[in-house]
Amino acid sequence: MNPYLSALVLGLCFLPLAMGTFLSLRVFNLPDITTDGAFTLGAAGSVLGLLAGWPPELTLVVAMLLGTVAGSITGMLVARLRLNALLSGLLVMTALYSVNLGMMGKPNIPLIGQAEGYFPAGHTPIHGLLLALAPAAIIAFGLWALLRTDAGLALRASGSNPGMAEAMGVDTKKMQVRGLALANGLTALSGALAAQYQGFADINMGMGMVMVGLASVMMGEAFASLRNVQPLGLRLAAIAGGTLLFRLLLAVALAAGIEPIYLRLLTSALVLAFVVVPSLQKRAV
Amino acid sequence: MIGLQNITLRFGSGTPQEHTVFQDISLALQPGELTMLLGPNGSGKSSLLGLLAGTVMPNQGKVMVNGTEVTRLPAHARASWVARVFQDPKAGTAADLSILHNFRLASLRNAGKSMRWGSDEAFRQKVAQQVVKLEMGLEHQLNRPMSSLSGGQRQALTLLMAGMAPCTLLLLDEPTAALDPRSAQLVLELTLQLVKEHKAAALLITHQMKDALQHGERVLVLGQGKIAGDFNGAERKGLSAERLLEFF
Image (tube, rainbow over all chains, first blue to last red; front, side, top):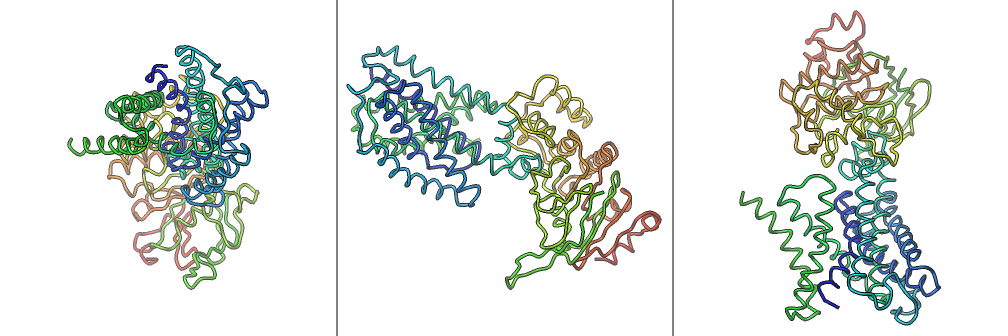
């Protein structure tokens, strides 16, 4: 299969993760690192569901629900016990490693030859792209629509100005729990999609997913801020673009002969570049 | 009637830094009445507003609203009858949301936030009708994020937002302190209109003797953990700046 097409499909699988990162990091200003654990949780849950004979679409929904539970635990640590967000995420992420391994029973569960996932065996590249496009589009549009509702405004105000939100009758603690639940539900969905696309769940597949989410959001925002984009819909579209671009850049790097072991070094360098360049440009103006 | 009954408020209870802000104070506010709240720094003006808003919990005593005790209700649960304006002009609005969306939330201060797109054309018209009063041209820019506006504009909008839903209690913590004279005048006028329109009990913290003597029906002065001065009716009319200065 064409490596660039494959990168695009994987990029679409990671789109919910990017949207989740946007939600926790940008809407709520919370650096949530539950992500790594929630991603694997979604992968494990959906693969186990498939092996039990559930329809693929159902396993995606179940994966999302599992992620929501994990995220709401992080949310409660932050909102109710007032723990630092990084610590809360670290605690849940670490605990999830055991939970995931316990669920899976072994570090790696292959799907190939065992069960048919969301991406049927022997699908054509275009078919794969279309299949991946459907959940990505639903999630991106759904999040945009949700954040425009009255409840969505309450969610956004809770992150932007908690004092004001409280004065407007919004229970900001509840909103934090819901926001992190949703963010990790989206992350788990990405885990499930990635597992079904790659044909296996692995206990370590979530490692570095915080960075993938971050890279996608920051690349998207770098473009949005260059054009000074404000409306929510365009910002989400820019992040979707950033997610795909990030996968394409990695594919280009691999095609250029970079050893796969250096991909994470490259990821860090890319994120650094996308953080530093816009701020340097602002300083120059 | 809105009031405080035998409130005692201490910060840092049980520590060497223990500090009594209020010792057994009581206060009743009347609907439609603007009360100007004065007092030296540290006399507890903001804490008094916090007790009414639900951001500060007393050690003893009761907070009452229309015959119901609300002492332990958190701020968000009191929002259906309390509207607040803050000293920091940026505190009353959400920077990342547009003017329109800020007004939408303000209009739902006393209601649930449901899963519908409430910021529709009809609502936009309603907001434009309010914003046009400011004569800042903002009625044509309702999609602008709050972060792009000046402090004076944001504080004036906060006042208008307070009027988007009914309120029985209006709490204003030095709303004009950070503003230039012209914006300060505008905000003060909007406050007076709001009190009149909603027949709300209003409590306004100020350090401006002139404002305290010119506006409102009642003047309260805090000092030494209690209400040191309370001027109403005829007493209020005969009040002079010199008399007020004695409290500082």
